[in-house]
Length: 562
Image 1 (cartoon, rainbow, N blue to C red):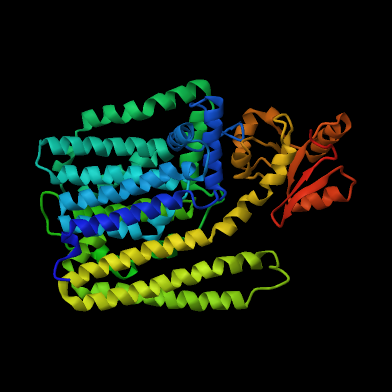
Image 2: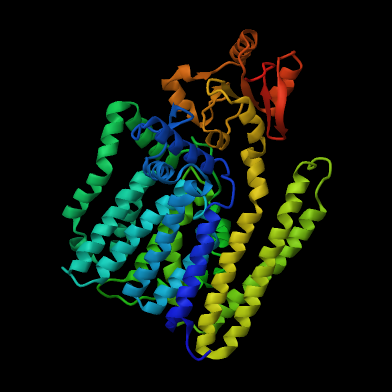
């Protein structure tokens, strides 16, 4: 114990390889869970199948809510490795790893080697970052690219003025903003730009603006972003207004997307997301306040980044849990700075809180399982019971990690370093165990239990598949085919306004179409909302049930598929 693990390449490589092995394994260990995972896997599958890499589509319908970067990368992954769960998550998994590597490098360059190691440990083990790195959604893709822009800016401004490092790091910053824009829209450069303005106002460091390499940066930014925006506008004149006005201005200023939330919406999510480092969150933020004035003040920049992005999304009219993910790399660097400067007390607090989280989790789980309603929750109870052992393991990992860290702290300075690694390991493992245990729920939400029965009915590619009153976000990907929407446009309403021939707005028209299939001896399959199934069942609708659960009823007509 005399030598710090931070000074042992063998130890660091062992930790890194174990981390990486678990990270990569978990990419393919679970079913894709709707809505985001199924949606973005299916969009990429359709892109690859049609060969159209410009006009984005979901379920064969124009879908202009977001830019194409993630769909491009997923489609490329499918082209190289085939369709599958891990392939659908490979891009987000890579973006999560990129964020960990970026904060490690930046921490080492801007602060010290030890801070770089701690920052990687903090970010890689944070519940939200490690979790969202295994979810096929846009939030991690955006966050990975925004981390590039943040870290590029920090390294550039820390470097000597006019140096090659300054220029190259700023070009990385501009590239990060461009790729963030291609990931999720204008926030990719608006938010970093606002942070830069706020930093300038606080520090009065106007000289920073002379070191942004703005000429080269803007050329790079527009070289990456402009071609697609121009091409899609040429092919789809309706795109610019929908994308720039409806998806940006309206989303922020109103509740048009029906995703509102209270001003404190993200506070509990931040607390959950930073586990196991809750005990150091406030102290880490405080390090940004105590930085002495100088040519460049990276801790103030990190504090502004964290606080402004959190504030921006908190006042937005549209809120979803993943929106605050881009603040976690900045928080990891601030917490790492605090770890290096602080004594054992903060680490003890984090260890104690980890133990309390484990104990509280066991108590909450026991209470919840003891109060399930066997009548109202009859279908759910087996799923809860299947999830319970995994949650128990999660809580025990938290308790063991906290106790282990507490005892390691008694062994001097090297004990503190081992305690940090222990807390990080426990935090990382508990999150991955909890995610793995959720898979039975994920399969239920996705409806994958019905795939075999549906494939048996859909042997002929010409057999129509209707989605009546609901749209399944994961089944089209697994079935490798689109559905015909009936009565419920879901999030494809804008696209259907421009391509109304692609759906059936009225249920009575669907019934006529279905009867026509029956009369002509043509097989047909439909996924029905449960109340619609009950309505049709009472009318003599020609159907047989091939799959059913509380979320959906899947029926085929009375024609036997050949």
